[in-house]
Image (tube, chains in turn red, cyan):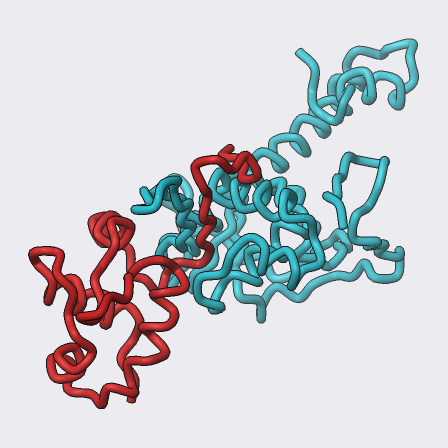
Length: 93
Length: 210
């Protein structure tokens, strides 16, 4: 059974206290699941820019640390509106 | 698709048209709610709970109301949300579409609902203002920011919408009381104007004028 996206995200953050990346194998061992079971969550987190893939594995982004500081479960996030610095498209209230 | 708007008598965004024959009396004994009346004063209360032992008014038991003498029309959830909370159908569509779908972008939402992206963003912010969603602005490493819309706890949402609706229903009940008083005032005043004129003068714009 695949772990929830939030579980994977929290595990990545806990495994990377110094900001270094954690390997997929290490994550799978920590969560006691096969590596392939992580794929859906990792893909979703990459799409949302919550993690970044590096040569060593995966590391959380600034956005992740901020969202976890809000005590928000990833599974409760309904909409992500990414706004570039030079974008005037998204109207913020 | 563009935003639907509604103002009394101008347009009906949902095409809802209840016919007269849809009015009916309701047997209140098997409803999910209960209405009690005080046999001593005119107090009437509504509760969504099955209260064992009933309710009291000035320490006296209240009487459970079992039928309505006036026929009523069945409420339409779209109209209720619009009237009570100012939440039109596009807002409800956005709300329903995002729940259970996992994080979506406004562009994905717009495509699924066939709305403009700007309409989706407008209603996302309306839902935040309404209290059904919470919004946080987070930084991106590559510059810019991310608006994160997340749901509030279901229990909290349930209670808050009920309290909000009760507040609205209380305001509506006050209007009905006010309208009844206006008729009493008219009789007492022996006005030369017709009741119709007096009533609409009093309720210009749909609310009592001071």
